[in-house]
Structure formats: C-alpha cells, structure tokens
Image 1 (cartoon, rainbow, N blue to C red):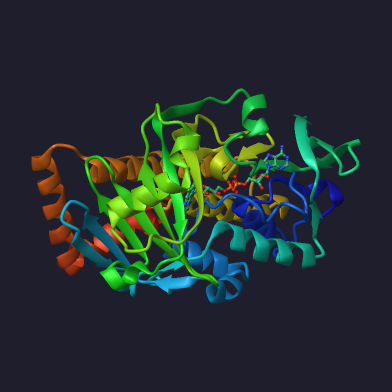
Image 2: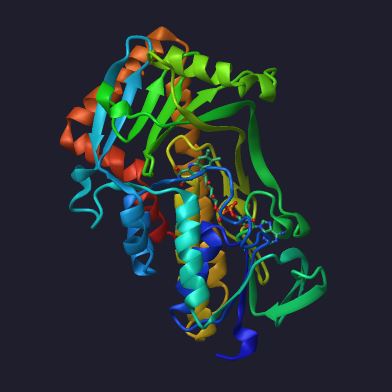
Length: 405
Ligand SMILES: Cc1cc2nc3c(=O)[nH]c(=O)nc-3n(C[C@H](O)[C@H](O)[C@H](O)COP(=O)(O)OP(=O)(O)OC[C@H]3O[C@@H](n4cnc5c(N)ncnc54)[C@H](O)[C@@H]3O)c2cc1C
C-alpha cells in the first residue's frame, strides 16, 4: 500500500478508535484526528458503557477486550422493574445466548475506559498517526483522493490527504453537514437527568442493569466498576425544568429518595443532563467521505445501542476498506456498507430504543399490564427469552445485515 492509500479518521471516540485499530492491524495506514488533547480527553461527561456480546467479539478481535474486562463488570442479567410497588417484572439471562456468542453477557465498561485503552493501543501502533489537539474544519474530494483541513495544536492550518475520509466525529459531524446529508428523525422535548451514586443497589434485589417502568418517573439503573463503584440512575425531566434547579443537591437527593428511600441520604458523586435525539442520516457515504457511529445515527440510551452499533459500523467498514485497498473489490462495496448499516440503524437501533422508552413510560394502566405480562412470559420461556436477547443485544441486527446484498 502507498501513502495515498491512507485512511483519514476524524474523531478518537470509540468508533474512530475501533476503526483505526481494525484497519491498522490489517496493514492499512491511518491518520486519526482528534480535537481533544491529553489534558482533557479523559475528562468527558459519562455516556455509553454497556457493551453487548457481539461488540465484545469485535473488541476481542482488535485486542481491546482483554484490556477492558478487568476494568468492567461482567453482567449476564438484565432486569425490568415496576416502580410503583418496587417489584421485579422480569429477569433476562444472557446465558440463553451461550450457543450464539462466545460472550453470553454484557460488559459494563464505560466509554471513557474504552477510549483510554484504545487510544493507548492506537498510539503504540506504527501505522496509526494519532493527532490529538487537532481540529478538523472541512474537506475536499476528487475522484482519486480526499483532503482533510485541520488546525494543528499550534493553531496552524494543515491539509492531510488520503484515500478515504471517515467521520467518527459524533452527532455534530462537519462531514455530514458539508455533504448536505439530512439527519432525519426527531429530538425528545424532555432531557434526561443522570445521577451518579456510590451505593450498592444490589442489596435491594437489583442487578447490574435495570430498566424501571413508571408512567411519570421511569428510570434506568446501571452499575459501574470503581474504585469506588458507582451506580447511574437516569430520570426524565419536564421540558420547562431549569437545569440549575434539576441539579441542586437537594433536588438530586429528593429524586433518589423518591425512587428508593434511604436513611442518611445518598452519596452523590456526579450528575449531568442530556438531550435525546432519534436520527439517522439519509446517506452514510458520498464518494470518498463516509459516516460511522453517532455521525450517522443517534438514539436514546435506553437499550444501550448507540456506541455498540457504532462499533459494528466501524468493523463492517474496516473490512470493506481493507479489501478495497488490497484491490480485491471495487469501492461500490461502500454502498453495501450504507445499505447494511442504515437498515440496522432504522430497523433495529431506532425501532428498539423508541419502543423501549415507550414501554417504560407507558401511561395507560391496561397497556402497562399487558406489556409487563408479555415481558414476564418472554423472560420465563427459554426460547422466547433467547429471541428477545438476540434482538436486544444486536446479534439479530448483524445476522440480518449479513443477508443484505
Ligand atoms: C447518557 C448516555 C448513555 C449512553 N449509554 C450507552 C450505552 O450504554 N451503550 C451504547 O451503545 N451507547 C450508549 N450511548 C451512546 C454513545 O455514547 C454514543 O453512541 C457513542 O459515544 C458514539 O461514539 P462515536 O465514536 O461515534 O462518537 P463520540 O463518542 O461522540 O466521539 C466523537 C469524537 O470526535 C471528536 N470530534 C468531534 N468533532 C471533531 C472535530 N471537528 N475535529 C476533531 N475531533 C472531533 C470528539 O472530541 C470525540 O472524541 C449513551 C449516550 C448517552 C448520552
């Protein structure tokens, strides 16, 4: 391969990093551009963290799994709870997937740990030119190559040329904007409040991942490895609520006490608010510029599918770019990438996450009862439970994508 075969990857998030590693490990030269620097890349707000079985197989392939497992929590169980009477509705066990995957569990390991470990591997790889504190500002493409315009750490403009440009920039992708690609979908009017607590909820019967159903105050409750261990609790807010009011210490305490009363109060270690979008780009590729991860699709975290499906984009794309650069296939396979991964984004991640929120927040008591009964029956029947988990863990999405020509 020659210098002009280089792939320019924008964004050292989980998607850009996994893509860079998968490419470099097969002999492809990568230039990885990241606006954040050594001083702040590990200081980002908490986001993703649940890694599904199929993603673990991919992380294993690129040498990341063995780094992440000791820093995470192996979690085979998933719970649904009803908040009003604090009763468990259903328990799903990923061990039903033992014949479908080498990893019949999720790994609770936060995005920032993935970034830290993947960045260390990328920096150590001779084929990856990692450029931190370098901001991507725009690009141009011809029939033969693509040029990325960046501002280097000294504030100087620079142009980097390569064969393809991949936007792993996240939801505010400049590449998507400059290509004039629509980001179709909607944004929920209410924001979600995330509270991080040092308290072991397992003593009340919860497991590492819990979805709590309530018509007014549904929640997600997740366990993360420390030290000290933390639990994240998500709550809905009203569109008119002021961010400062929501995040006052006494307001955070009241939320948690409303969820599960605790004498002496909770040890709150952090909080933040986030806006939830459900959007998919109308194109994932135009010419030599390609979208992957959040730059191509964003969704609610209920179901833990954003980062996971982004990493699935990265591995799918890496396999195609490697073959293109080896001249084994033409670059029309990138249109197949678009067909496969847009299908997954629309029919799996969007459909599932929208449905997940609707089920948790359902207001009609009769529909709630029906939904909960269905969850209970599904969890108790091994065949139905396996089918449910194949879908919720995105294994089904990969099998379907593989059938798309
Ligand atoms: C509260 C919350 C919980 C979540 N939980 C889960 C979960 O459990 N499981 C799951 O699968 N998903 C989850 N998600 C979604 C997940 O965080 C995202 O889907 C994932 O981070 C997307 O990865 P990415 O690499 O595409 O983009 P990002 O993680 O957004 O990374 C983009 C990178 O590009 C860099 N960048 C941006 N612009 C430029 C530029 N102009 N120049 C250079 N660099 C640039 C950014 O600094 C950043 O490092 C959650 C999201 C939220 C908000």
